[in-house]
Amino acid sequence: MVEDVTGYVKALIRKGIQAGASDIHFEPTMEGIVVRFRLDGYLRVIETKEEGWGPPTVSRIKLMSGMDIGERRLPQDGGFTFQIGEATEERSIDVRVATLPTIYGEKIVLRLLPHETRYQSLGSLGMSGENVFEIRKMLARSQGMILIAGPTGSGKTTTMYTMLHELQRHGRNIVSLEQPVEYRIPGINQVQIHPRTGLSFHEGLRAVLRQDPDVILVGEIRDKPTAEVAVRAALTGHLLLSTIHTLDAVGTVLRLLDMGIDPYLVNSALTGVVAQRLIRKRCRQCYGQKDCSVCHNTGFHGRVGIYEVLEIEEELHPYILNRCSATTLRRHLQKKGFTFLSSLLEKKITEGVAESIEQGHYAMHVEGDAMVR
Image (cartoon, rainbow, N blue to C red; front, side, top):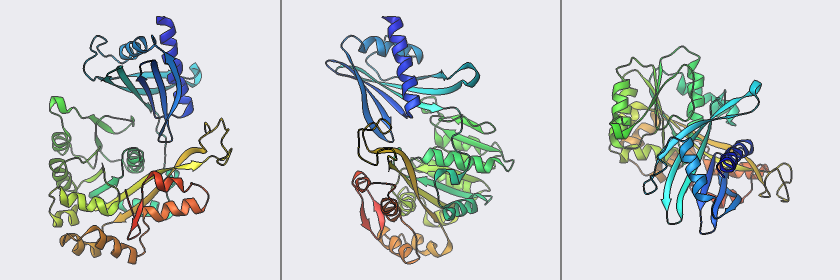
């Protein structure tokens, strides 16, 4: 049974990698376990195993991840490196593992993180030429803060790493603070945040400022202390990149104000915001007719990004200083010809790249032609 379980787990991981899954879920039930892959942002049932496979499967994954296999009452985190491919073309995948005790047993989620950098340029992300030009203009500055905004799973980390790749060409001292480090990038000083040991984003950022950095990456701005140090870094000769969980560019500006950052500091420190979503593409094999092995009968295969890029120019400063509402700021931007995420999604639907169902999945409505969730 041990050999069977070991082979079963490895085969499933290999299958998930080949399918392009970002996560593999092992979910205990009364009857056994259900295995689901997250493909193109959505979970899909891959298979079920009868009762008796659950505990040994969980124990094997916990052993591979360096966890305490005897501890079943508390959540645990771990990980391992998985090798795939032939000896001549072998590649490594980092597997981040998390357990959660449920009433039917331990649930396990595996996050699959390839070692290699997937994207080499901003254009390869699917951005328009105008977006690429605006972002490169912001990256060319010696100081300031650039925030990448969006919900979980919208591709923020990929965009941020791609920006780092662009900056890496200029011989700068780049330091990142991440929780966890998702992709390893040669030439960048990557720091793993450990809140339990006292190394928070806030404390880590303070330490990084003493390392003579040119560019600083902060995995996420979650609270006021981190935002305050990030603003200070951006005002003292450093270029700072970070992500934030907001719905659009305007909402990002207002979130900083809500965190307690003074409006004049937002005007001085914030260079720009890149807000984004990943939307599913129609399957080119079946075009929604289903009965398709490529898209697993969903009608969708792969995702494409949509991006709104807002540069904080001087004409926006009075709106920020006066803490005007999101509606007022969006209306001003609309008059200036700013392209919002909702318009970009509608364009993808018109072009036949995406289906109208994507609007429902993001529960959008239009307010000043802006995407709201």
